Length: 233
Figure (tube, rainbow, N blue to C red):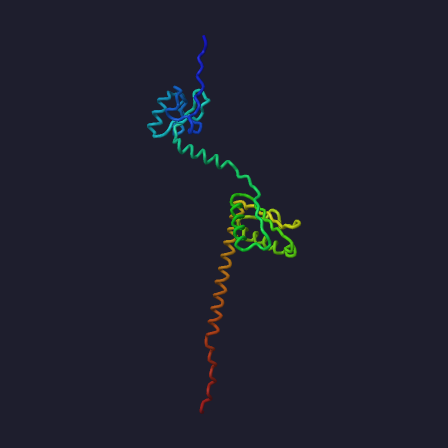
């Protein structure tokens, strides 16, 4: 006598994120874990559905290859959101090298645009290669290129650090910045706040000393003591 085999599970419906839920679970018996984590063992699928409906939740097939399939009672919408968030977080950003090109005579407005663009790249976790290209007579003023690159280091110091220092190669001068780690950003932020507080305290102390000195200067000079007159006797 031939033994009867269970038919293979039907393919999951589109949009169900590879999970059968509720009435789409057509197998007669399942192994059930309820919303509190209690394992009820193997029970009728209809009974599991009633338990899910009474709890106001969904019956979700989480292990279709098991025999019988394992189902859990849960909020399926919340489960999908949590799963999607975990998958998104697991995809680490692959840092790329983005380029910014300048000339020695780049106008201030264009320089601000380049700085903003560089910060956007850094915030996304990418490195930034800033290049200054020289043409013709501009080669006589390479110090201008160095000034521009130092400007990038200074203006972006709260978000990046120098990976490759300023170098000149032929008609170009370049600099490579890499993003700070979250720990490095917090450390620099605390340093900046401490420096700001110190400067404010020094300014207050300096102003107080100036007021005291001004008050002393405006105070009337003490009247000299008058000598006593000799007695008439």
